[in-house]
Length: 171
Ligand code: 5GP
Ligand code: MG
Image (cartoon, rainbow, N blue to C red):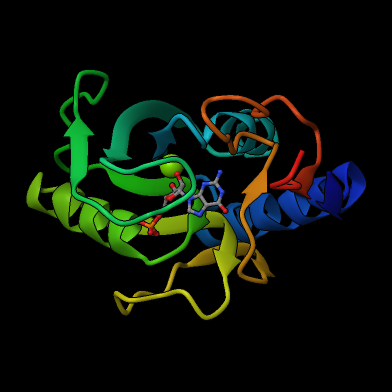
């Protein structure tokens, strides 16, 4: 495993993302909508640094695909998503790759008549985006390699790594 982002680098960057949100929203209540399952570690770290009143909601998005490939159709599960009408939402995902997931989910939330949506991704892969989309908050831009850790998985493993690494495909 090659370490791409250390635990310390991630912590510093999450501090900064939280500071941006704290200054942008002030005391305004927000609802964090996390995209399962990759969001969980970022979500847990981020919310403990936020100072406004917050609610948490979760949505599941998964594409039909093989293991490391990201083509395929998006499947959404709204089982953990409450009525968000009128809420100011911050949508949180682990990584923006082609952009399909985050772009689709933002439209989906807007169609639920939320008051506003901003989007936050921990990682954005350079040179992979197909759908034009600008997240409001970005942790790191990374090269086009398959990464795991800090919530990101390979076959549902490695989510618990405290750092972000590039999986050695031969291992
Ligand atoms: P997009 O819809 O932007 O193509 O893909 C976003 C989703 O693909 C992410 O939420 C994540 O689940 C998955 N994904 C894309 N690139 C990677 C990667 O390098 N590592 C992992 N573990 N998942 C990825
Ligand atoms: Mg995901």
